[in-house]
Length: 121
Image: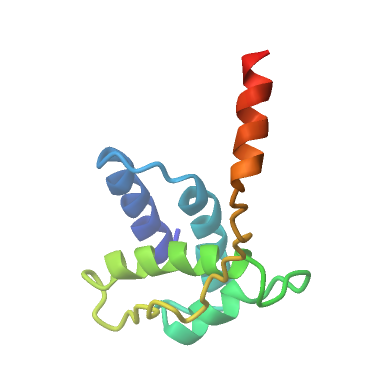
């Protein structure tokens, strides 16, 4: 078991005991740590985090997968920075999450009258 694996176990336990729901982190971070171990990288760096987050070829920059991965790694890196001063914390906005909002539909006075008349029936 690597030092990162031990640290991940401690991190997830701590976050869980603090009341955080760790659905994404508990699923993503073991994959990240396994990848770090397989590539013989003992310390989390911005470059390593970025490389891992972007390695899934079926998604592109407009996907929410990359930012979700980075959010999980950023939290873990923040925790690790207290243990290993060589740890680099990926900055916010490195993989921005693009939100696609639909414009709101604004009812006209006629629409409201029609709705109210229909509700009276």
